[in-house]
Amino acid sequence: MPGNHRRGASFREAKPIAVLGLGHVGLPTALGLAELGWQVIGADDMAGKVAQLEAGRAPFYEPKIQDLLVKHLASGRFRPTADVESAIAASKVLFVCVGTPQRHSGAPDFGQIEAVARTIARNLNGYKLIVEKSTAPASTAERIKQTIQRYARQDPPAHSRNGRGIPGGKAPGRHPVARFDVASNPEFLQEGKAVENFFHPDRIVIGVESDEARELLEEIYRPLKCPMVVTDLATAELIKHSANAFLSTKISFINMIADLCEAVGADVENVARGLGLDPRIGPHFLSAGVGFGGYCFPKDLRALIHLAEEHDISCGILREVENVNRGRVEVFLDKLRHALWVVQGKTIGVLGLAFQPLTDDIREAPSLRIIEELLKEGANVRLYDPQAMPNVRKLFPEERERIAYCDSAAAVASGAHAVLLVTEWDEFRKLDWAKLRPQMEVPVVVDGRNLLDPSAMCAAGFEYFSVGRPSRQSAFAMAANRRR
Ligand code: UDX
View 1 (spheres, protein in one colour):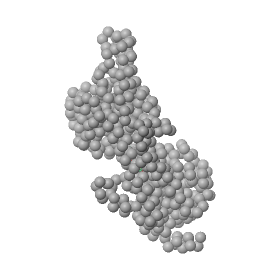
View 2 (view 1 turned 90 degrees about the horizontal axis):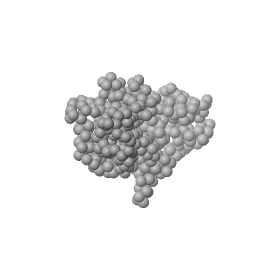
View 3 (view 1 turned 90 degrees about the vertical axis):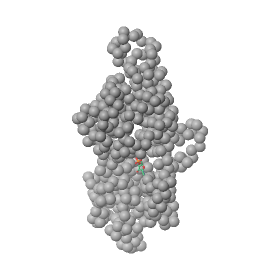
């Protein structure tokens, strides 16, 4: 992590930075800035979360975040608070990291962003730079600006209503609005790697409308020494949505190719390797599997589709990315149905519930639809994930026989007619699979992330199925099938 060398003493000395919203974007951002040497106030209106943070406990699992939290509570460079207004009043640069949930239609719900803009308007006690970091469709920053302008004019700053700050405690009514700028600075943090991504960004994107805003953001991020894209507000916002839509497209593309590989007997891993060696394509995000999930890709894709359709721009390509992704779970479960013939009454082990490794996040995780489908088909499920089980329990409470939570990956195999690999946690790769086979009722493994080595699984006597690769069955299994 970069050293916290001192720079631009004036700004650094004068005022702290406020980060508004301490979720999966705000907390890594706040602690990252503290590690860079900035004084940071982290504000969130969820008092319970703030109390947890003050007690030195991170509200979600993310590698390295707990250490950073403890370190900067101790260094005094990170102060969590539920008093959003004071945090705003005390700061010059405000990173807006509140949620942008989505309506069913795909339309973004701007409620939280609009509310924080009105709170900022009430606390404009001097020049402020408002930095939109929440993922929001193009033109949101413009809306934030309009909202602050509108509400700022109405009342004197909240902190002056008691007469302090503005000489003579002016009566309510039209008041000069303090200068402010709105900037857009999208984040590209991946869950499970957020702290790493913060300190080693591929690029920093800033959408600004003044030199003052540009200089402040350049100073804040200078220690990171990475390429900076300086542009306008709407372009910066669109870079974020396009980036996620493009990465989603790569994933749906390779998943479509994986199905083709199965049809013609090819191997998608080698296809991906052959593609990825071309720098125009690149090797990343070409891992075929059960599809993408999480809070970002599905939502950002829907938001971009919504934005495009709002402007009558044909976006069939994005709709197809969604369709391919939506179909992955069925393609995956068909492998199981093919292997077991009848799923009803069987015990199915599920390894991996989080939408990806190194997080406890299950939002739009493929595992949820897989569990739902298996239960609907009358199977019993044995579930395990290193981090995400508490979150899944809230949706699928333990139920004798039908839904069991195991305390280890190996325990999932006990009495199972098949084991499904849904999230590519490293510990699953390291499992002693040969030892697991005798515990299983039927040695069927369906690998939805191509995590395991087909020939090793075959040698260990498994009927092994994966994605876009020729399925491998041991001689024993083939003989068993012939007898079936
Ligand atoms: C994503 C973006 O990567 C990040 O830049 C942005 O800020 C937020 O959204 P995140 O959703 O946390 O981050 O995870 P990411 O690692 O991008 O994976 C997204 C989904 O794609 C996961 O479900 C993952 O399993 C899946 N995926 C990823 C694939 O199926 N195949 C791949 O090759 C890569």
